[in-house]
Image 1 (cartoon, one colour):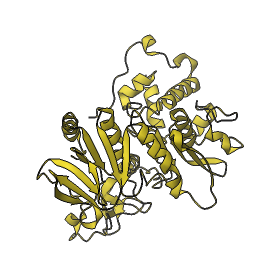
Image 2 (image 1 turned 30 degrees about the vertical axis):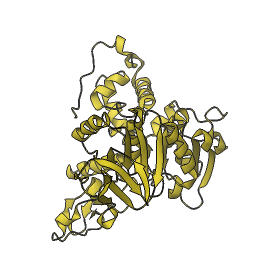
Image 3 (image 1 turned 180 degrees about the vertical axis):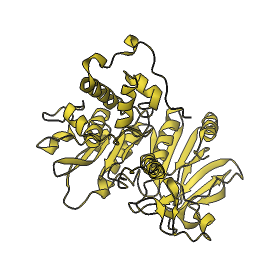
Image 4 (image 1 turned 30 degrees about the horizontal axis):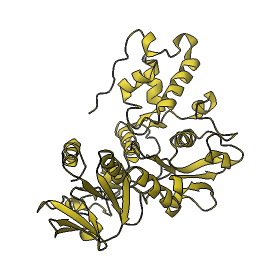
Length: 394
């Protein structure tokens, strides 16, 4: 199985009902989420990666805590670079394929009976490939466009060979690099839309500078943001607290009294506080060590302040799952939205991982106080009528 669309998800759920053991090939964010989901359905799950779990976001110092957290969620891990898929005891296919990438679709020669990882056998009667994607640049070999891993584009997202051709998302290779994450795709889409409309496009963030990656799994807390782990710069101050036996690891990266990166495993409340501090750019304690423990004195509050929200630009993304900015939420208030639920109806903000719920409420309170006490946000039960949805999305 692969997991690319809703039909794939339905097929995987149906197959999970008839399986006892499962292997997930690919230990990135999606692989972790799939493995936890299958474990939650009662399967014996092994997550297989090349070197470590979420190695794009997490360095070796986090691996022990992440492995312990996955174990507590019912997922064991295995690592290796040579993987063979077995069916009824016989070899079916080998992954990774040519160029280090998996085959487009799993071989359907027979029912999966197991997986070999560097010669070690992993029991599995259900296999899910979550090995990432590769742009199909072969389609453009004769086009004359510069190609790398993807379609090479400049800071304006246009091809240097033809300024009328743009590329965004997974197929693009911008100067800042590509993360393969939805937040970067949303930023590129907004920038290109403004450019095509003749407006001044918002500046694009770097590949790691503004990214927040949150694992969406019921039994696992893992969040990485900004220039953490191997992405941090020389001279940045790194502070960490690790408790691998409890599956907990907290790491912050500070530059010029600003939180520029963080990793939090195993502590959901602290992860929410760090995300809030990072995305808003709010002041950090004089001693950054207070960031590592939520209850410590001097910890930056998770609730918004008028000052921090005033300084936050309208283009700042609040709901990363659905690409909703501060300006979108302010616009909803001005059109009549007075509750988080009404904003969610209009923009889908808060309907993904839910991390942004507190921030959305803070913005509603802030704009209400700034634009007139008579228009203060009200609770849903006191609203005169529901706010109509402004955006229809599947």
